[in-house]
Image (tube, rainbow, N blue to C red):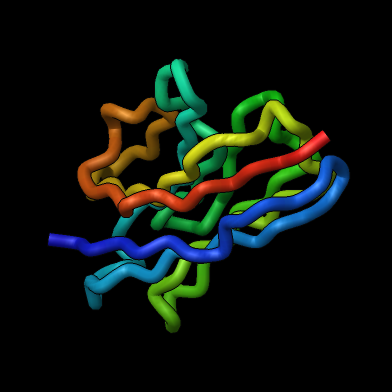
Length: 124
């Protein structure tokens, strides 16, 4: 079972940046599709960004394109989310997730393992 630990959340002003990190415990980390998802108070969990195991290609939710960048370092068992031009509506708990499926997913149900989440708060 993969254990995921996020870090890097915090309080930032609108227009600022944050970089989230997620450390995975599994030595076969490179075989997992990885994703970042988020959940704001009173809202459903939503997909933010994903990166595939096969070729490290990336994909994003439409509202994050151009502002967020997901990347991975398989040697360090770590996936990152660089968030720029943050907006108050980006305020949420951000979760790192891993999927052992062959194909990537942009739905929460497509992920098998989850971190505990890290809070990101963007002030106006």
